[in-house]
Length: 587
Ligand code: ARG
Image (cartoon, rainbow, N blue to C red; front, side, top):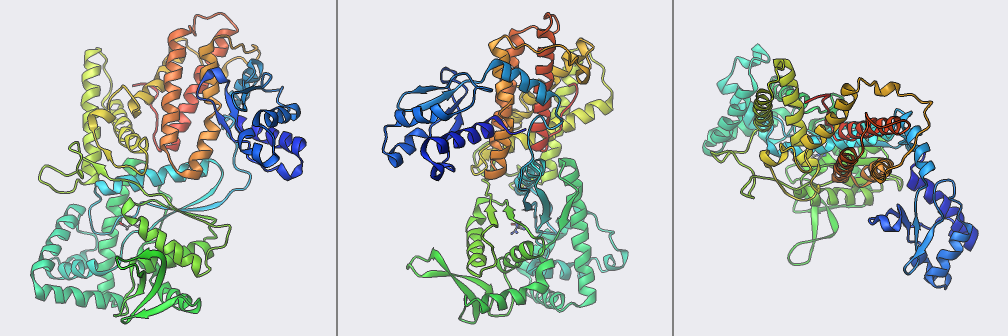
């Protein structure tokens, strides 16, 4: 089933070609949903940009297109408005047929793409040996959402984590491990993560103050790079411990277990060849012993081109070199058509630079898209970078636990006030679903590129564009089925559907836009569009439900409305699941 907008696009392109010749068959009809119902449901604005090309007034262009346009199976007679806009209003019987069709479709009428791509989504990639903190919230939440949306549309998604598991910090960790926990090397994984983050702090303190320790750390890096077995063993212990603790948080957050774990170290053996290939491509320049690629469009204050250093004068490699190797690997070995990265805005230059280098090196076929999806900071209620009371970065686990604890307290209070007795297991499950959902939703509903203020009060509120509001709209529908003892999946299909009230039409038309919204999100990776869409759906549904009786309505309205309720709930559930949020049947 093609989306309405897709169908209209095809029809318009055919009409434009018929009116002006095949040369115009790929013209963009500039279609969109109208913002004012006065102008119908969809609008095509193609006549305005086309007018110049065909040397006719825009209204005349619109008229000629309409003379060829065949849409009477889905729209009322189109109208030309203002300077040449074409307004389209969906027919009621078409909408009734659509409702029936999507109700019977497990995908709610949302098509899979006709040309699936192999997409590598790079997330969430913390640096090993540090406890995950608030800075790791956004890549985990956004990356998971991207992967889910793309996968739902039928793309072949490979989730790859690019954890920082190599480099100088390991020298100090290993040196510290050797001197303070010599037994850990035999005892295997005896350290716990709590140990590990204290451990990191201790190591850092020593490193900053003790020159003998610095030397030991430097030596450990050399040994690590040389592949010394005992050093590698210590390194593995640190990596394993960190990964295990990350997994526990990912599980709590609903981050897919199917993440392919390729830390920076994975690319080590490939780095010399990356440098050699850049040299072969004629891009490499030696500058004071360092091997560099001079970048186009990146200059220093004096206006001189900036170098991307790919190999330092001591022979070591950089973060950038590893990313160059990773891109090459993902294109050549993973056969990716699209590479997606999500990191904070601070890394935008890094990605612009490595993307430039790989393109100039000729490693990126024209069909391959490189996409950096940057995100803004998470701020505290004071508008500054979020911190704990003592001024430290907030551990991610604490942040999530607090959301769950507050939700639990709210629920217990409400249940008590309502005289409801719920099992502990129910309360726990609900607190977790709502609490985690609220944190994720608050993140995803912001424009990805902006900073946002992290506020428990706001995100846990039952009012406004929040997860609890959305979850509640879903629960409201489930309440209807319980109250009427109705099995939504077994609504009679013999009763002809009949849409009567404007509020019904408004909900259904909104539901039918879901396919276009998801398609758009899959392209620009802006999940706030999907949040906004779901929020408007809940609002429209609530208006409908306040206005139209459902269980007490006579047939055929009753069945029509029940189907509308059920389809709304399924749309909410699907949309939330693409955001990585699960629903509750009651709350
Ligand atoms: N480990 C990096 C950090 O914590 C993020 C890695 C992002 N992915 C990449 N391919 N560079 O900042």
